[in-house]
Length: 246
Image (cartoon, rainbow, N blue to C red):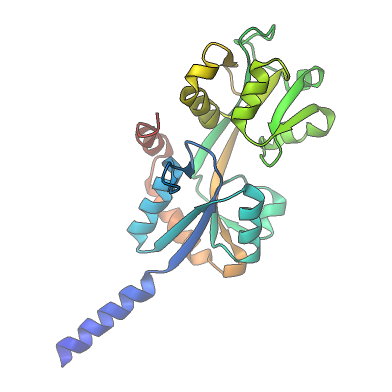
C-alpha cells in the first residue's frame, strides 16, 4: 500500500509538471514554416520543441498569419509566440524572454542588373529615391520601420512574390530577414539564380525572442525557458540546425 501511494504521488507530480503549452509562429522559412505534410518545421520550431521536452512541457505549435497569432497571444488564446521583436506596444501584453532566442540580421536584395552597388553599404536615407517591396505584416527593425512613412512602398503577401517583382523590374529593393532571404533564393534557384542578389552588408541587426502571454500568467515558464536559453549558444545551435534546412 505504501509503495502504491508513492507511485501515485510520483505520477501526480509528473502530470502537474507537464503543462500543455500552445505556441504560435509565422510562416518564415527556414525559421518556422509548414512542411509538405502541413506540419510545423524550421530551426526555431526544433529549438522550441527541444526546450519544451527538456522542461517536461507538452507543446503544440501552429503556423499562422502574423497578426492573427499576435492577437491570440494578446487575448490569451495562445500561450506564446516566436520569433518576435521587442517593442513597447508588445511589452504591454507579452512577457519576453530575457535571453535572445534568434539573433537576426536584415539585408537588402536587388536585381542583379541594378545600378545599385552590391558591395557598398546602403544608407537608409537613400531608399527614398527607390521603390521598395515589403510584406505588409512584417517588421523590418526600428531603423527601417521608422522611415517607412517616407518611402515609396509596394506590398506583397510574401517574400517570393517580392523577389519576382524585383526580377521583373517592378520594384528596386527588397528588405528581408537574411535567413529568410537567403533560404528563399536557395529554394528557388531555377527562377531567381543570377537575377536577384543580396547587398553584402546587412542594414540592421535585430534580436528576436520568445514571447509569453501576460494574460495567461506564464512568467514562471518564461523563466524556465530563459534558463535553458542561457545554456545554449545561439550561434552554435542555429549553425547546426541550419544543416537540416539547406
